[in-house]
Length: 154
Image: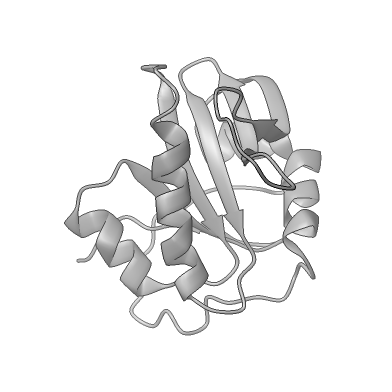
């Protein structure tokens, strides 16, 4: 992300929006966290105050091996961001992420909150669902060299 910038473009063929830059979701998270200041400035157009990975949702009583955690939680000047990361094998994992984001976000009464889904495998059906229901979710395709935010059908 040395010359990191953001552009608005129109894409008609989404089939190429899948990458293998990251072996695991953890690698994707580490890459974003390493470049978090640039990511927040360029992609979110905000100024970072604090960044947390594996942010635990405290008011959840959960009986299992792991409590629910937000992949990345950002406190920024304009907004606070609840970020769900996906490095999926199947596009349907992005659809599941929509439910996760909505479930996590309802537990924050913060009026500054924004939801973001970052994926390495873009799924147009997930994007259409976000658009159809007017969900307040940024949907971002992410690779080491390119980020593309879904902006709706043309």
